[in-house]
Image 1 (cartoon, rainbow, N blue to C red):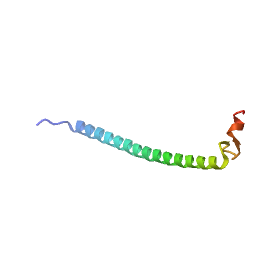
Image 2 (tube, rainbow, N blue to C red):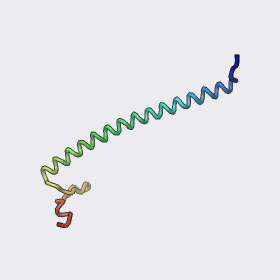
Image 3 (cartoon, rainbow, N blue to C red):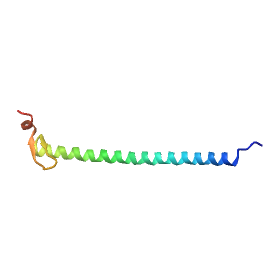
Image 4 (cartoon, rainbow, N blue to C red):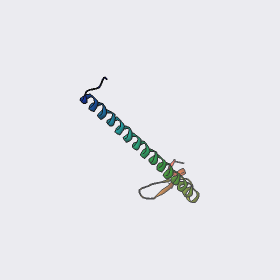
Length: 79
């Protein structure tokens, strides 16, 4: 029966193991990416709801996110 050398077999096993580990790492990354995307979508939904709430209360405004100050959008457009 034909057979690989011990060194060839060891190298083959190491390379297969390395590839399996890298595939696992990519899979873990993709799962984390999926969860991060879901969180972004959830936060964006909350932001949109808050924007709608603020617009109902104050009208269409531009907000300085650092200070909380705001101006009417009509005022900042030069009209």
